[in-house]
Length: 482
Ligand code: SF4
Figure: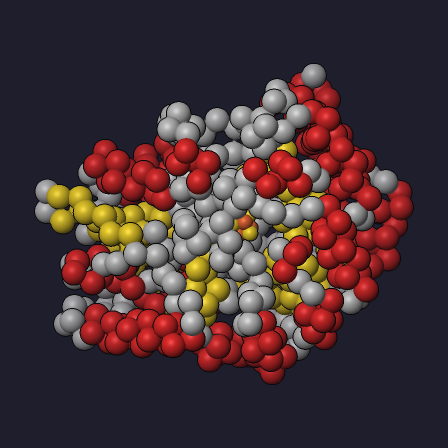
């Protein structure tokens, strides 16, 4: 998209916003942004469903983003029942005390049945006028969810806010990217965001900052911030790409205001939650904003083939300490079949360049990818160790609702939870390989010594010990079960 097109679309969004603002509905109504309770620590935000590993938990970025745009129109409250460890009964009592006129809640593929049961419970006990949902399952099943659950009034395909406002105010002609109930009909509009966006004043103050942690670097308090929405690429197994969520860039002044607020509130660590820290022609301006509002210690995700040595040097100079790469697999053939055209050499080069720039690299892998053999899994796990990452995350392949693979396989998503693996390796074997790989990386004396010597504070050492105990607990539990 050229600059003219981006500018024009941004102007349209800006015009749209005051029109909704002046529609005469009452500001005082409370809209509750809710991460519902769960039986285990779950991360449901950004249209992704995952169990928390090693005790980490980050802020639900969708709810934070919505707090900005909706805060212009409504009184906004945020309740993260997962972070607070609330059970359903405690959660309902809290919600009743907030007395929201509307609730916007996260749902996830791995807790969907209980999420929907909780939505019904809120409707029965608290009686908000509307309940909207967002999260991974809505990307492919929004209409079915609203049809089946009479307590639901809409489902959002992005969290940039304008559609939520339009549905809450019954201004359905303004809806661009959501499904909603209008009388007896359920309507669906799918116009992906593809321009610039603004979020307004993000209400970080509404979350208990002490509850969120992402070892080794992000000890509490830190802030989760967005510079972009979605991703410009389209890997077949992922639902965050241009063909699913879309891709839009945040207005620089809007970002600058948020970073200024964060700094004023004494927070100096930032987790940029972009799927890929924007590289294509945007990085220079973003880094300038970060430098001018900092100093911050920060971390981000990036694609290994999109970070040049120069860019990494600039990122390091503006406070970046850790770059998290989606590595997925060592096999370029396997990745190529999934529309991800990356080879091991370019990944190794990125890891070397990160270290040369004085930062650390984290690595995310997916095990059990469609067509992956056991030999490929073993080679990938060995190679993971040789990359010498600051941390590693091994994830079992799941069909992501809204991804190309999910759309191609109509049997992939039969009910609450998708099938976990379509690869050639049995799930149990994958689990064993995964646990062994974690132990090989994290329990090496060399790794432990390096982490402790790199920790910048007692707090970081404490967080690392916490994560190590979590991991050891998991390994021992598995050994006892076998
Ligand atoms: S896997 Fe990463 S690069 Fe590929 S579409 Fe998803 S977020 Fe983008």
